[in-house]
Length: 169
Image (cartoon, rainbow, N blue to C red; front, side, top):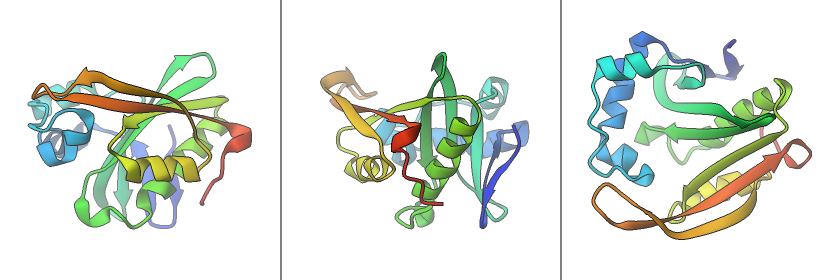
């Protein structure tokens, strides 16, 4: 994968040298609570490095790592994506919307015709961003899973086809 760039933002393939930062984020309950891990995931740098695959990417603002994103093919022509802006001082500034626009545009240019994702029902900020980019809510899953501490959680499934994509970059 070639780097995807816009202004001072870069999405690039995660490398072994990024594993220390990724492990720190994944072990931080404040970063991972939305994904069901309010106590973090309890991983090591070595485990993270070993698991880095094709679709695991990091987000940089200038030279600073600020988050991560990923994609995987779930069926022919359909990619499932995820994104986290992990550095709190980089949240609520429109960075996530730009990164999503870059990633989605790249996926559509590289053979995907549909993008899917899900988010916690409580994450209304993310839902607003997804809908502003053209994602369509397809399902709400009430009390569909339990988080790490046994609390029932609900999620929202979204999908986006290229004709509905509203890029902000």
